[in-house]
Image (tube, rainbow, N blue to C red):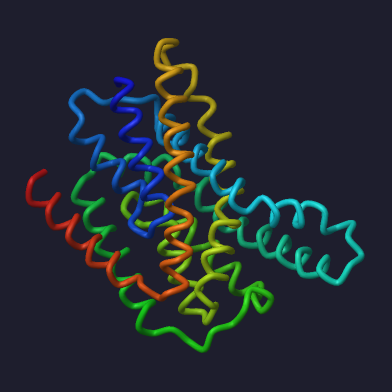
Length: 262
């Protein structure tokens, strides 16, 4: 893989990780059309995801500090963040179980372009439906353990290439009646343990990485971080204005085009 490929894939990852169009699906499609592309396991994909994880951490830094210190905070807001911490832990359990149980077989699907296209179609259906069939909005403080469990389950299956993690989890929370901005915020906070866990599991693949490829991988991760910060701002504006249907049509269009030419 060349430095140019890494930078372009980093831009693609950063732009599509937070917009609800499936970064894994776009990476799988782009890598399919790069002649001779290879990586140890899905190590490069994980490096890109770590780059966007750092973007989430920067964007939600104040929330993370409040959550981390909430067990010792005696102020009224401390209980709010303790509740949020419990929700993140509870929601991460089904994600971890699904990821550990199905990581290897589902990883093989990254090379199956028809499956990626089919999952993009499903992502589009979720987004289109979520915009039209929302329940009465609830605030972040009204999130329940059931909300966290269901969202964690959906996030676990978003390991499928073409299923947007952010899109599917935000859509699920919208179906559950959570207000758009709160849904996006919880979706991103819930993603952190999942992405961090996936990175740890992929460390074993680093032994298969050639020494001259390490700077290229890091450049891709840095690019994903920068473009990811920009796309977070865009998505927060999108969910605030309730404009998800456009991304549904985009997913359907990409799926149709790639299926025809692959």
